[in-house]
Length: 231
Length: 406
Image 1: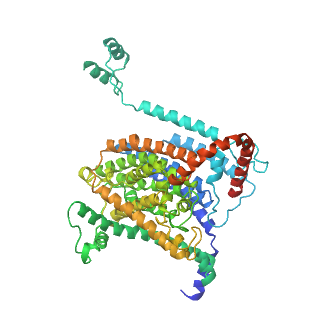
Image 2: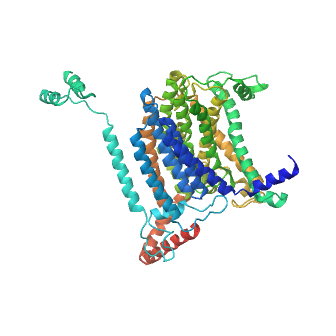
Image 3: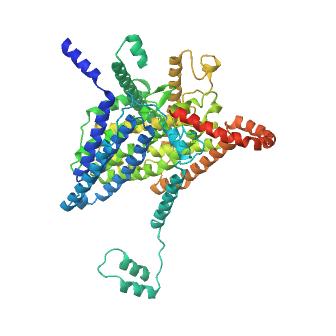
């Protein structure tokens, strides 16, 4: 490499806007991986591409200086896809489900929905007055502290100028509602998945249930009831 | 350091930052890879001692200290095999996913004060979140291997890691609460001074929760007695049954990397981080805890402190591995759901109450409690007066937070 070309390459290297470069890189990974989720027909690969897409989105959050949101993205979305992946693996252990084919009708409906969502997002993106770029590198603004304060009812981002007199707003009530909701879901899941106690049916119930059940229906109903009754 | 390169040597800013980024990455990589070499040798010697054997003795002269290097060369020369029915892309990708997750978590881990790859405001959270991603590689490996043993191992690992994240998170929250920050650097700085300032000695609850953290950490990095994913007596080698050569060694490096990571995290969260048990530098007047006359030397000492503590944690894990028998899957789940989670929750409440009534640690807190009981009587008469001032102080606090967040 001669001197001139070396100088050209160095100046080219120096002129790269690294923040913009990484933004484009992460955004491209997120978009391409999201497309691959739709286009691939293997559940596990879909999950892998979903992880890639969500991870790249987390990278975008880190790039924008929203560390807390980025870590949340990693913890909840990428970690949640982990469970999806587990289910995918369990499903594809049977050979008929290894490759999933989408029927043509579903493709049409999905593409209409996707186009509508895309139009809304594009419109939202262009309705913003001016995009501003955060400074070079990561902004070390404390993102967690205002969030925590907002959770207990002090919105430092909203009404600081008007005197903070009444700590209104805040996310405490929504947070509590969501946590109680999750608790209900957990209890429900535990109820559904509990170890079922074998109930010996009375002869009257047995006859009634055998009459009511279709003989062609698969599953555990007639067989289990009969075997349970015979014991 | 980048400022040094820019000002003293005169490098342009972009080159200086690129150099620093590369240097940090190489250093972290060496911590993992070099650490793995040493730890594998140590594991063999410790296992041999515990089982009344000799372990490696000849390679490299005495003690077989070059054994890991010889193994590394052997692994490089091994044939890279892939099963016929394997999903080629995922099979090749899986070891790197595991290793990358382990590597990424080190980015936010401070090795001494101001010696951190990228200081994150939510460092603890980031490390725990990224550490949980290591299991991805394991599941991919288990699925892509087209082998029942691998699949069983991966499923076990998934169930175990997902459930142990809950108590682990609860344990990690306690030091965060004591330090008032999720920044690992701040958490380390809060424990400067004598060993009594360490969070493990803050109060009885933190002492208990440290051991809960140790249990959960061992489980989350899949070490014995929680190594169901690679139970060699049942599953051949679990998720890495079909791997050989360098790909297999990537899994091993990831495992030793995350062992070191959770140990270093334990050291920072509970054991004072890079602060020694005796504040030697402060006693000698070399530093006042915040600034120092020779910050570089103190950083080196801090790194050594942290490495010593983390290595002690890794050695503890090895000791446990070669001492305890492997748990069954139901015992693993029982340990998590019936013991670790409730204990962690109760200790969390305890620390919260302690922080409310006896803030400032065991020794100082007890003194302060005695004093506050006496002053409580005096204070009660002022109570009515201070109500107005209290509401005022809430305002000033929120205003202060607002200014900080700006």
